[in-house]
Length: 298
Length: 269
Image (tube, rainbow over all chains, first blue to last red; front, top):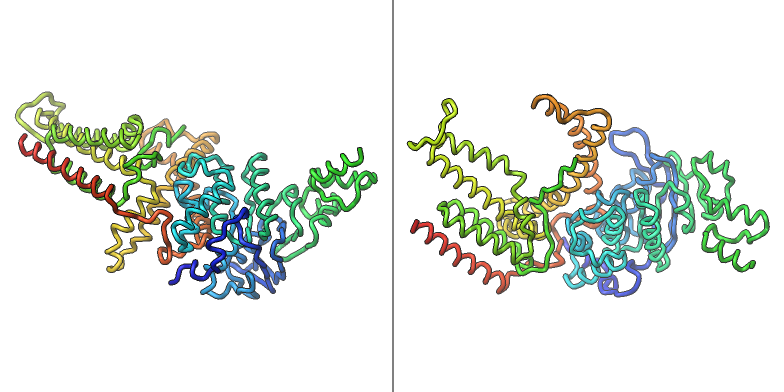
């Protein structure tokens, strides 16, 4: 079996740039359905969803609605029972392309303990590139870049068990960065983090997104979706709402409550300020942007 | 209640030392040879020399003495039990004392001391290997060592990967067990009072959630490994490829010379 490195374009192997991901990938689901064996109920029912390269999608929905299953379709961990899933035009059903797909789309799970394989920080970061069959010096470069970017370079020789929860999740992210995928799937990746760790984790995601990486973020917290371009709500295996995140956050508090969500305080504040005519309606529900507009008024 | 506190066996202690940098195959070979030689050379002076080698190696590899001594803690019961069996069942003419039919003899005490020391030295040698070799390096070394057996269908890579994961999850599972025990204690579970059977039964509510957790974790870990492009050993490379150079030759030669000296000393005794 040829190493995955043989399938990758040369620029992906020897690139050295500030962003750790390659340019964003396009993710596309066409009539995708999924049903677990030994279970009559379909988890996903006829999902049509196109995620453009470089887009940030927030995926919302109650527990058991099929969000995590959908992410696994994008990573070819699961294959649709019906319909198709394409990553940069490659059908995930093509067995030969699975390794290539996984080098383009990486996933970070909820609990870092479940995804760290090696006992030493740098060895775990190297796990992905080692599987890709890259050259030793290239692996070292990638590991160094990834660990510096998440602020764990000083701890590269440390045991994983000595890291805090936040550091472990950043290590999981470094392991993904070292693969240099074009898309990052976050399966409630921030739900186990304290506020400070969540902020630093979110900052890392923002940086990668600004350099062109596609982000698909599964979350239950609306204050985590403020940076996303588009929101998709999945209910009972179907898309029940999709549109711009700003439009989603403009939905009234009661309506959001009916959908099972609590409006984030920053969106409530923005709404009140817009209603009072203090800031324009085009302002994003971002505390930094609101502050800037208010400062301009003074 | 802290389960992992004080348990150092199997843990890796990172340091920048000559021993740490040695090829894991070399360290594995030396450890296996030393295990055989400790059993061959059973005199007390020979064991004193093995102990001095362990102390020297630990010092050179910056392993704290406390960690080295503590490494035998998990099997201390086994060492004591073996020693007791030797004291009372070896037999001999010089009886020191007797408890009913059990007689402790001088010969038995000497054998017990010898066996106990042997076991202790074996554990220390193994601990030195794990202290100075990261689990990944160790599994790489094992994979290379078992490499020739793959021709006969032996799954060398799979065995090595299983070992890496097992070692990685030792601290995690200790933490999880501790968490479950604390949760059960907070709900009135009693692990300290009663006889052996009652106490063993009390651990059932700990073992069941632990097993469930382990299976769930194994499932997610398998997905995470696949997601990170893992496809078994085929096409997989290493960040630090194994290299057998002059340092390994020197270490092995030094060990062979030292072993020859110990065996000679043992024969003279």
